[in-house]
Amino acid sequence: MRRDEFRTEAAHFARRHRVLLAAFAVVLAGTVGWQVFTGPNEVDRMPTDAGEDWYAVCEGTAFTRASAYAGPGPHPVKIFGAPSPGDGAKQDPDKPPAEWDPRRADQVRLVACAEEIDETGLGEVECPRYVNRFPFDLDGSGPELDGYVSLYETRYKVTLYEARTGDEVDSWEVLGEDRSCPRSASGVVLESGILPSQWKSLLQEHVEKTVD
Image (tube, rainbow, N blue to C red; front, top):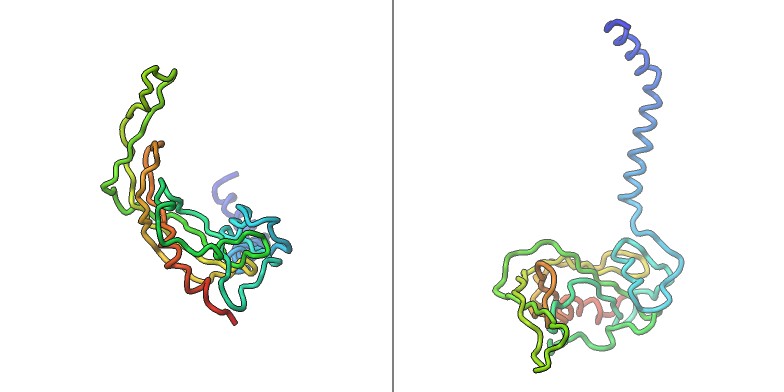
């Protein structure tokens, strides 16, 4: 087929399938729009306990049988993300009240999710890494120092959701202030976590207030 014949045939093909292509574009755009604008994925159930399954709310799920975020506080909240690298959480004296922590599935009203944004820089903390001796020395000597692991100050995006609707209640950006070292560091780097006192400061207004 000569070049001019190919161009003519291509033009005819485009005219014949113009409607089909336009329809495909509408369907594609509608699919993308549906994913963006439909909101949380509503599930007509809720987890059987107050455990890790509630993390699904952080990923866009709404458990429609969860307790409503309404009435007087406190409104128990599940917290996910930004864990303590060491014992900082245990040592923090200003922890959230015990009644914030749901013990049963029907107590969960809010879900707070921390997502790492970036590592703002290298802190001054160098956490020791140890290697256990084996077999154990007869003299009872402990683990042997095997270098250090750097702990980075890390910034997080914290988003608070209503468990029943999946709606965003509030959001913040926060620098993890927990720079405690584990007993023996592992991996290449460590990241600072969010202290319990920071969680308390962020969430207190929404957990304690009366919601109409």
